[in-house]
Length: 441
Image (cartoon, rainbow, N blue to C red; front, side, top):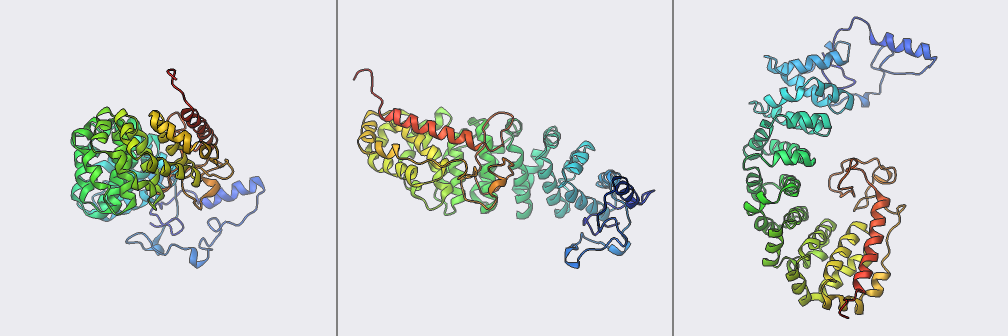
């Protein structure tokens, strides 16, 4: 019952040998090629290409032929088999098959999500972990996400796993929750779960770094939809404490959460009370690029109030020098855009505007912006190259910030040209703000 070619349990006895169908099609098309799967004997591969780690309890000498959608129906049924071994094999095969989009869509149509949710509290930790991994893959499809969101019970199950289970399962469950919150419509439903913000804030303080980073991303997505529950749970003070963490990924995640909180009027007032504008100055010179990007993005919201502008005037020279250094010496358009946005906010203060015109106007005019050929749409130099940039075939790249549209039907598609055009417009707006004269003058 095992196919060594695909490392899966989807083997059935077919009425017709599938190789005959393949040969008939090749003969009709007059197409000759060698395929180790259709030739006899079937195992005509190099030994190194065979799977080195088979699925558990496998005897490949007893594997039967046949592989198709009939098998998908059977393993979907075997999820609730009375035999523990059959159930484990079915879950292993589904985890393998959901990596193929066609099979994943077929399993979604078979309503495999409902069966998986019922097994989330299984006594076996292997089953719990693999179910979280399967749900993460299915959540990347609109149909799968829609099916998952129709059962609010899943969020209670995920929070139970996140708070009480072993570390491996906590990581898998946290990744599933983060994947679901990437969709704003899903965030609107998830945030209604009782005490979910409070529980995530409780876990992020004392959790492993890898899991805490996932929690911070989840919180960022949820707070982006509604800032009130986070403000009631003292999220601002907790994130402020996380800025003292030694891991730059945690610091960057905390700043991103503070950015979402500062979209609310109360968040802006808290930023003024805790003097966040002055607190963020050292982070603009951090050796970690993600910290500098997040700090500049947070400053874009903390410098909106009148009080923050008057406070920034006290250390105007140092702050503007740091921001201009990032604009002129950095070739990262993400960082340049955010720093110029902060400078435009500061130029609303007459004293800072006079300082900028007197010291930095020529430097602003000399800011160099990369062309679309020089930039692949990410904030870091990656090995993916054209896959993420010029051809606009994007994928989820963990650890690398990808420039995306924030709205519209193509929200996850990289649009390098429009982003660079926006950067040129921001530079023109900064020059206009520096040379702005009040009607009184």
